Amino acid sequence: MTSASGEPFDLASLPRALFAFPGPLRDMLVAAVLDGRKTATTGLVADYERGDEALPEIGERSVVVDSTDRPVAVIEITSVRVVPLGEVDVAHAVDEGEGHTTIAQWRADHEEFWHGQEMRSALGDPTFTVDDTTPVTLERFRVIADLRTA
Figure 1 (spheres, rainbow, N blue to C red):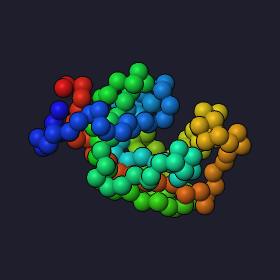
Figure 2 (figure 1 turned 90 degrees about the vertical axis):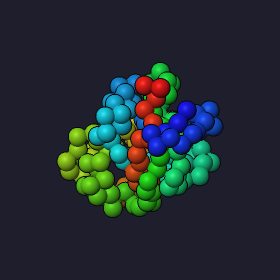
Figure 3 (figure 1 turned 120 degrees about the vertical axis):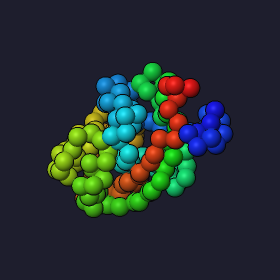
Figure 4 (figure 1 turned 90 degrees about the horizontal axis):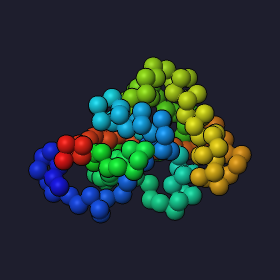
């Protein structure tokens, strides 16, 4: 397998990029990645800590999977910032490709997800909540291979 620039990569050696949980939200987010609307994402630092995972780094590549766990693309991180949730800007919110045009819309949808049963279960904290001081990762990425045509 090679990237659009002809660089070889081994899909089996790459981590998986999981956008949300399997289901309609993941399907929508993956579609936005594939059509170019989604070039950014936000993660909870607490999620990385819970999984004992390193925070993402520029240049890292991962395989985007859909709700059926099928690899559909390879992405490469182009920018990472860790900021308090209250510092997320509208440009980042728009680049997440979910149709948000204000921070208030973006924040309401993200809080609904982060405060949902699946996320609280994944974090091992049934009362988990976020506030303006909650540390988040703001990642930007680019698609380097569309695996649907491979």
